[in-house]
Structures are given as structure tokens and as C-alpha cells.
Length: 349
Image (spheres, one colour):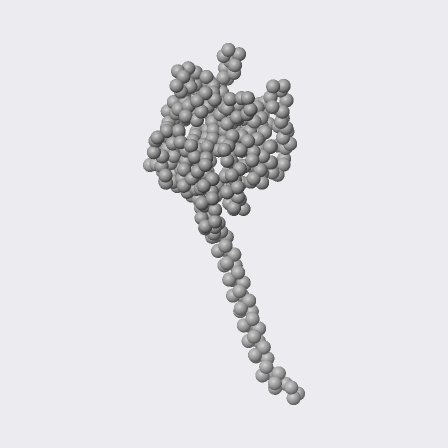
């Protein structure tokens, strides 16, 4: 009984300490949650700050080595209005003239986070610039390099090409490996079996595909030109998705070095960096709309060609004009008609 009074006197103090302890614990927990939320919200800003501080100059210096203009035209230096770019995947090997195996006319709308990709089959029968005769469109690169390719595509589509970018397939393989592989929708074995085709085989349902498999995916040719073009577009999407992952932003200098002489463009380093940052700050992948020039196969002098549909060329010209116009609101952009590329892209049809 003698100890009761002191006990009563000390209990309130103990309770206050408990409440105080719980209060501080709650405050600390709230602060941690807020910090975690802020970290999630601002992680892109932090990554971009780190890039500007630590890597921007190195990346710019490396990109400058890939710069190669084709004329004296003044190109836009700021990422503002929509612009067009011709993307070429070249297949240059020993003892063979380089040909543009992948030809994609694209319109980029940085502010809207949208990209239009128009694939042109490599066997498209059209007039080659400066030659006044028709042939397969991929011959333009072999005979006159990037300038003749640009001029030929401009003549076909009736639209100016603001920029170009080419990458050799060997460079594509190395870039994929540096990114740690890509995800591809392959559900069945893809294999070249014909005698005169390059031997390749890709196993299905892998979580990640390395550069060798990615290159084989692009080169596989024993189904149709339509499906092959679809695969090229799927691969571009996969590489973009992988490159925009936060963990890969620190790999940019190495990626540029890997591309090296395999990559050429007339976009300046400043323009490319600003463009990449614009998309990265958008918080998601650019929305990509795909379309492929329609046509039908035809034999001439024992060679297979792809005759483009004239009505479809007119439709594509309308599509490009709509997307390239800076006054076109995002909600009034013409979405290209579906060409069922999801079913075709895996190479299983």
C-alpha cells in the first residue's frame, strides 16, 4: 500500500510518454509515406537532373559523331511542331551492296506524345530518284545512299522528309544486348528453312530475347513482306519500351557508343536529347499508330515486286498531311485503319 501513491503519480507520466511515442511514430510513418510518394512522383525529374548533370555532355559528344547532313536545308533545332523522319534499317554485309531492308516514314508529334509509322515494303515497285526508271524501292539506298532514298520516298508519298535516321542491323543487335534484351510476342518457332535464305531459328515464349534473336526476328523472311514489315514495327516498339525504362537511362552513353558507326542521322545531338527528354517527361511510351502501304505482288523478269495501290497512296498522303499539320488538334488526328498487325507480328501466319 505504501507504493500505491507513487504508482498513481507516475502512471500519467508513463501514458504521456506512450502517447508521445505513438505520435512521433505516426508522424514518422506519414513522413516516410510522403517521401516515398514524392520519390515516385519526382523520380523522372531526379533521373533527368542526373542525366543533365552527369551524362548529357558525353551523350551529345557521341551523338555528334553520328551526324551526317545530306543537303544545306535548315532543320528545326527545337522540339516543338510535328516533324517527319525517314527511318531506314540497312542490311550491309561483306561483298554485298547495302540495301534499306526496313523503310518507315514517320511523323512525330512531340507535344501530343504521338508517333505515326508508315511502313513501305522494301520490294515496292516505284520510280527511283535521278534514274527515271522503276525498280524495287530498297535499291535506291544501294545506288545512291541516303539522299536517293529520301528523294525516292518523297516522290512516292508526295511529302517532305525533315530528317532521316539509319541503323545497320549489326548496330541494332548490339543495342538490344546493351539494353538487356527485349520482349517479343513470339508464340511459335520462327525458322528459315529455304536453301538460299540465311539460317536462323528463334524459340518461342522467352521472357526476354537477346540481340541475336531480335536480329533474326527482323530478318526472317519465309512468310510475307507484310508480316516482315509488321515484325520490324513490333521490334521498334519493343526497343523503345526497353530504352524508356528508368533503369536504362544510365546506359545512354554506352548505348550511343555501341551504335557508333552503325547509326547515321541529320538530327543534331541537341535536338535528339530534347526529343528524348520530352517523351521521357511525358511519363509513358509515345502512342504509336501504324500503317502499311497496301499493294499486291507481281512478277517481272523473273523477279517478285510489290505494286502499291494508287488509292492507298492517296490515303497515306492525306494521313501524313493531317498529322504533319501543327494546327491539327490531337483529337482530330486521323487514326489509320487497322491492318491486323497483332496477329501478324509473331510470324506465325
